[in-house]
Image: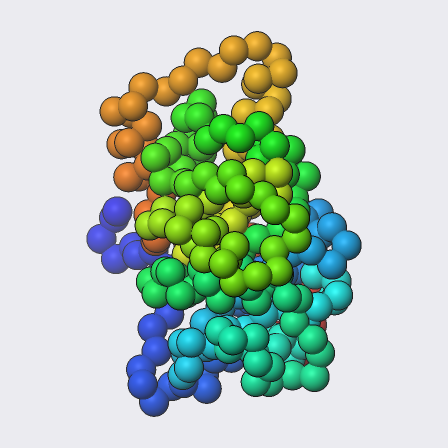
Amino acid sequence: MPEGVTLPTPPSFGSADVEEERRYRKEQLAAGFRLFGKFGFSEGVAGHITVRDPENPDSFWVNPFGMSFSRIKASDLILVDHEGNLLHGNRPVNRAAFVIHSEVHKARPDALAAAHSHSLHGKAFSSLGIPLDPITQDACAFFEDHGMYSDYRGVVSDAEEGKRIGAALASYKAVILQNHGLLTVGESVAEAVWWFITMERSCQAQLLAMAAGTPKLIDRDTAVHTRSQIGGHFAGWFQAQPLWEQITASDPDLFD
């Protein structure tokens, strides 16, 4: 990097900046939903992204049940605790969102945000019951860094299944929910959303490659090295920034 040239970094907040940090997280979350809408990740009322509240980390902000991703504003977001109690807002929470995300957040105190939707290629790939292969540079971000949950039992409605999903996620950045879809986590909303977007597209790439023939795998040493280059927390946050610039320019009402 030339002298005097620096990369942007995620903002940092002090203990006195709770309200500012809360506003920032909610705006990031609203932008994440708008991106999910742009990418066509909506499927009826399914799908949710969450972020911990900076003052009360045992509660999280989430989308109101039944609201279009493409219409969500920061002011629309609701706050719920890990028991499903509504702490802020006047619209209901999707029970599946509460059950999955509360247990994921409990299992992963390091994860500030989590993202899940019924995206087309993610759910198609999940039906195969196999992990992503290192067949592209982008897929290497998930090499030996995603779990498999193979015990699908219908719409998630009880805490025990949420706990099993959290266990399958383990310390990874993502988990494939067999016959269901994808779930990703991150130390920021931007990171979790980016992992979801690029994992969905990696699923699409592998489906296309498998339909055309037998994909050639990247060798393990190279895959691990590539993951170290593009699979870290900062890399996830940074790769989301062009998308954030686009969505905040095209959808300025998300800040309302």
